[in-house]
Length: 133
Ligand code: C2G
Image (cartoon, rainbow, N blue to C red; front, side, top):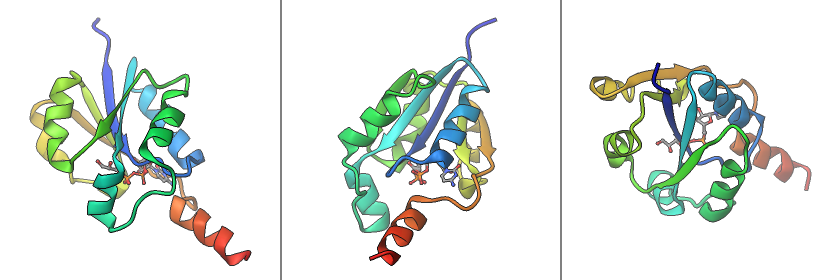
């Protein structure tokens, strides 16, 4: 049987266990895990703010995980179909905060939404640290 290629996307700012959980569960769906790291500029255009960690740092952290096989920069949300095709992905995995949003790609790959890990997010971590000042 041919090896299954999994693709997923994210910012992975202040890398935490919620990020690790989704990457571990994504890897279990196949053989090769490819991760698109959203660029600083893409984040700015989506959220009007830059991540705390620079894209080079976020990419290095994710790439250093033993379960991750390939990483690349996600420059634009509109390029998702191109990335799926370029990286020959069999399955697109996204957190269920994106439920239904990527169903349009079901013509080129399987689309799976995984449950987010409850009670942890980069925003929450920042708020907790700020409140300790
Ligand atoms: N995640 C999770 N549980 C959490 C927090 C995050 O499962 N408690 C998942 C998200 O659902 C996502 C991945 O971790 O699949 C990365 O999360 P973010 O860095 O917040 O990604 P986001 O900014 O939503 O970028 O093309 C889409 C974007 O690049 C996604």
